[in-house]
Length: 83
Image (cartoon, rainbow, N blue to C red; front, side):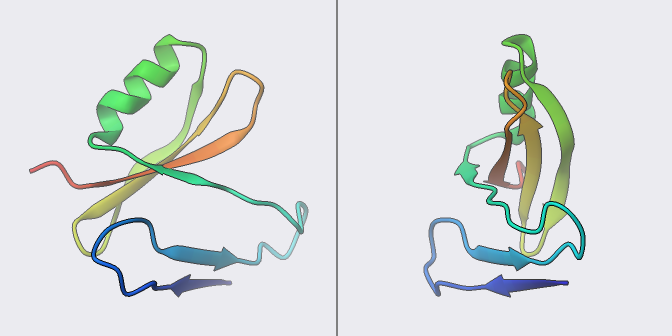
């Protein structure tokens, strides 16, 4: 189950609450807003990270991705779709 939260702000990252229904029952994923997810993921992989998911389109004209840092921590990226 997932719920989107909105801050009603034109800029920045909106909120998202998810219940997986299984382990891990409590977790946090933080997101970093970037200009270009594809380029950012390429740099992450070159420096020892691992792409996990994405980019995945979001309405309206946004996208997200997840990566694991070299220690295995999952981090999210969010960006406007590159036109």
